Image (cartoon, rainbow, N blue to C red; front, top):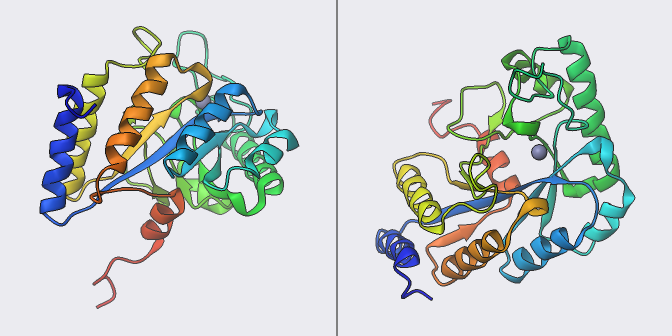
Length: 258
Ligand SMILES: [Zn+2]
């Protein structure tokens, strides 16, 4: 497989990292989990096989104890809060948002507090106080109040903006939402991963892979399997649990209090 030129580029990039004595850090966020399904089984089996920690963004209003029972068998899974009901409150001519400025801020914060309480109540120690806004969109005013209702971290998509809590964004989305609605071209995804690795090498964020198990086509599953295979072949890679990044963001940086 590594003779495939698409993947060979990543193999070489990781080899460079190893020679430099640096680790390439990855984490995986998968959105929209509600119930156990064959697709969720496939995701949990695949990530489990490669010891890849999976952060599942779960929709609080739609989920219940069935998912709890399933995840009890998946110790590599962590649960984050995916809004409240994944309901759009924006007018039809605007981008979809559940957590935008279309409702009073108190109403949005009430939903989110309820979401955190529900997910924590169901999943206990498996839950992390991280908000994953539906459609990766949230009003900036709501962000400033997330800490006051118990959130320690926020995860959207793309380069992080300054915020009063830890921001741990995904940055490589495997799905081609605007085009085929299937998996992106594997070559483009490998290129995006290499670009993010180079950014991380210069002090930027780790590779945050974004998946949506419910809509994966075969190409998406194949991409994940190949990526996990390549990254498992080198000591230069680490797939880390989300807690590592939350803890790291909360630790004061060395030198601050000197
Ligand atoms: Zn979603």
